[in-house]
Amino acid sequence: MVLDTQLPSRSSHEASSASQGPYESGFDADIVIVGAGIVGATLACALRNSGLRVILVEAKPKTVGLGQRRAYAISLMSSRIFQSLGIWDDIRPEITACDRIRLSDGAHPSLVWLRPEDLRRSEDVVYVAEHNAMLRPLYDRLEQTPTLTWHCPAQVESVEYHADCAFVHLSSINGPSNGPSNDPNDVTPIHLKTRLVVAADGAQSPLRQAAQIRTRGWKYWQSCIGFTVRTEKPHNNIAYERFWPSGPFAILPLPGNRAQVVWTAPHEEARRIAALPEAEFLDLLTQRYGTQMGRIELETPRIVFPVRLMQSDRYSLHRLALVGDAAHNCHPVGGQGMNMGIRDAAALAQVLARAHAKGQDIGQTQVLRRYDRWRKPENLLILAFTDVLDRFFSTQWLPVVALRRLGLWMLRRIPLARAIALGLMAGQLGRKPV
Ligand SMILES: Cc1cc2nc3c(=O)[nH]c(=O)nc-3n(C[C@H](O)[C@H](O)[C@H](O)COP(=O)(O)OP(=O)(O)OC[C@H]3O[C@@H](n4cnc5c(N)ncnc54)[C@H](O)[C@@H]3O)c2cc1C
Image (cartoon, rainbow, N blue to C red; front, top):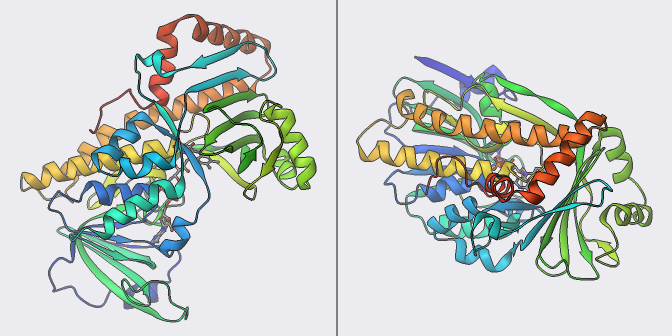
């Protein structure tokens, strides 16, 4: 079987000239991972001791990835995965552990508090980490991995899938590992022969689209405004999720008197709010945020993200696997997207390492289906959870309002209900990869 899967941005002429080359040579790697965001880098790190040779291809210079100013809620399960990779001790001093999570329904006075004790744990169960607090230790570890080769900045242009191998054609800027070029025309074509290609190339995943893997889902009526603030008073390590009819509003505590805000609103309203002059924006933010943290200052620009739910029909094909946002996207409520991707990476690494140890061909559908069967249903559950949460709290229809007040009452009164909610957020349900 030969499937020449050309990425949408390339013309057929470019693809055919790129594919002339090293067809007779041996394998350059066992696995080519496309995308060195947190998910792709976690997968590469998880494969370090597997005996498999890995090539990591990233389009953006490393300094750009490391410079991203975003923060995420990170679950207990993700922390376990980072522990197993030996990088948790580098990450932990840079991030915040949430002592408590406060849930509330708009202006309604009753509150639900979730605490580690609800899971009968004395340790922390949810953290907040900035992008580079996770990416830097991952990259540092990968720099010390002799079985890994970087191509960065380098862009994958097309992929050919054959019965016994795949060819990845990429344009490397200024050679394989020499860092960013000053001359944008200084592009070297590179051809890699591999057993397996992993798409960790984000929500638009050119590799998923080129392989014509169907996706299901929808765009929400909402966008998210994401930014970091500095506060006058300490946040006391409390994370807030407040459900307004326009959408959820989350505050994630960061080290120092700082916090990441994720503010969801209908598209038009989100764009209008994000474009307000700073003083007006901060006034509105204080109305939403409350006055408990004193004066608030913006630390980063306000970035607006449209929100969507997406699940790929399959997470693998012959010689191709999808991980992270390439496979699924969810509403940011509950902070699950990155955690799902980190877990995909750990699960896929485990499946591949075991297959390799048994002498199996890691690009075969039979091997990759184990990963599909493991992660697809678990991710579907989380997608459904975030969707229901968003819809349930965004409506003012009285029967639903009554039902959600009952739900919040149950969360306050019934320890098992709190344990299930927190267990889901902390990644404690489902098959564990570590
Ligand atoms: C507002 C908002 C808030 C969020 N909050 C949270 C949260 O609190 N907790 C949480 O768990 N998740 C959260 N998420 C979700 C999270 O941001 C994503 O799930 C996560 O960033 C996906 O990581 P990734 O590595 O799969 O993809 P990406 O980070 O998109 O990485 C993909 C990489 O692939 C590279 N690439 C793409 N195409 C090519 C190519 N052809 N060749 C080479 N390289 C290529 C790109 O340059 C990029 O570096 C949030 C999302 C939003 C929108």
